[in-house]
Image 1: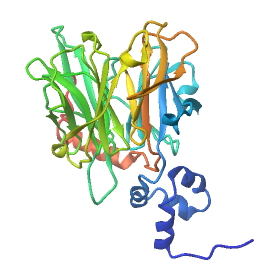
Image 2: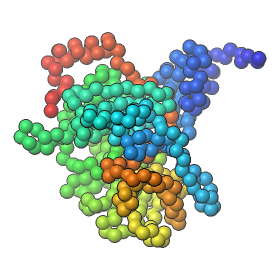
Image 3: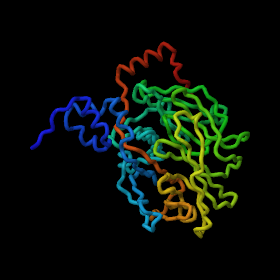
Image 4: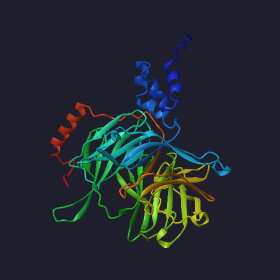
Length: 398
């Protein structure tokens, strides 16, 4: 058998960092040196973006891996969708229901609940299979919202954090909102000093470590809101259109971890148009700008009715969008279609009756080797000592 000659460590690392992450996970047991290399933050950072993107679908509280064949769709080739399997270990038990997933550069934040009402927050790398359960500072609530992001650094691997929006009724029976930050390094939650004077009208998406939503208030209407995990501050930017109509449907998505895309519908005005915009590539939110990507007039497809899109992702090369929704006129079944200027093709229809609580969601991601940081007993001891010095004021109890 031919033997591969020994290579200098730098050259070996340079070659391996170009290999897709999924292939590297199969090689990690080859030798101890490679196992250690694949966990090295510098190697992981070099390997980011070397994998082909994959798509997962959250539907009926289960997470599935799917593939949507769009090749040749404009040349008469029939599009199709396939389920490649159930992805997540949390779904293995019938007692566990995944309600929300949030993706940040290949790591997935899963919010799940059991039949007895207990909520769980788990960070999961679908490529390596690693998971980490995040314990609450007090308790998790059903109305909580979450986002996963990281501190930007040119010199080290990402330092991840979780943002939690906690809504609850206080002792005066007034509904209040509190923001909390979880730091993976210290394994601790703390309260952010920020008042919520606006509403959130879309699911969030992560780009460049920050999280973006559609926000809105009575004075300014809708806007693009973001949270910077480095400065731990909120900011806002205008949308490519202005609206004060809360019947407007606005959905955000990512384009290859490089740009944001925005889908807008207004079925309340009996409009049959769907418009999609895409941003430029930007490193900082202040450099963001919009350009129109696609306008679809559903009237030309003679559909019986048009539903509000819940989640979508774009194929820039084919200039189409893959959209999913819950059809309220057909027993809440999940349906998925591909749409372009002159194209409409349904590729999936749920066979069994759906649920009004089912909110299907696409997540497009590139597998990576990011290691989910575990807190050492030494780190926990330091945090307890810090809390003792500050009188336990790292976080206020709601």
